[in-house]
Amino acid sequence: MCAGLTSPVIAVDGGGTRCRLVLDRAEGRITVETGSANVTSDFDAALGEIRRGLDQLADRAGLTPAEIAELPAYLGLAGASDRTVCARVEAALPFARVRVEEDRAAALQGALGDVDGAIVHCGTGSFFGLRRAGTTRFVGGWGSRLGDEASSFWVGRVALTATLAAVDGLRDHSALSEALLDRWGTPAGLVIFAAHATPGEIGEIARDVAAAALDGDALGREVMEAGAAHVGDMLTRLGWTDGLAICFTGGLAPAYAPYLPAAMRAALIEAGAPPIDGAVALARAFAAEAPA
Image (tube, rainbow, N blue to C red):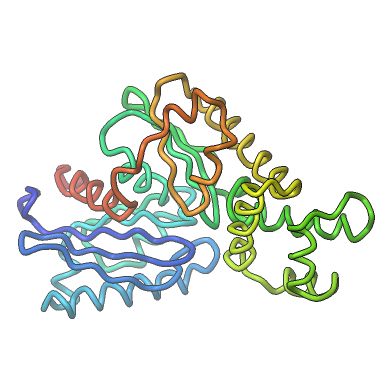
């Protein structure tokens, strides 16, 4: 099959919250969306969401599942952290030609296109990446139990932890900590919420933290400044230098801008496209490669 821009390809951007699947062809793009596709958190459930999305694509395109399986496919998936996991996903899918990678590559490609720069992703989770002169390096993205610093989950958790510290008299209350305590009624209510909440549910608190910080709340500013310090540290460790573009992705990331050093603020650019567009570009690059 010709690998030109009009030949059809399948692209998948599978995140911890939702999975987007695209059939990109000459007649236009067909996009469907399913649920979480983190292959480390729940491999079987993630594959189920991907298969469900592929069935929806086939139905909307008027193709059979077998015809879909003949197309080159690129999948950028949350939790696809090493080659063993990627190979397991590839073996579980029906495609004759398929490449599975972590979702960070598609996010960077979508945000930056083909230019050099850095990406700061702070959504429910977090990761950081930098591309220069054909070399790309990522850090972070290890999930809420072992990482995700500066993510919305992290911001929410730190704010809740500080609220309980204020209950213990270890720090002063602020308007934010009092509001968080009031939301769940008692310290025990807060603890019960946190014990059963998903990272996404805890991450919803980050919006309140960011807003409180802008209003001058001491706890809000402390948390946002700590998150921004981590962002700056990761960019520096990746080798960021003055003038290299920085792109924010994820719902929380832009909220860190006021707390970054001036040189980093000056380098901020808008994301060129969402991760699914990056996945489509990577799918086309994969399709253009000679079959192994």
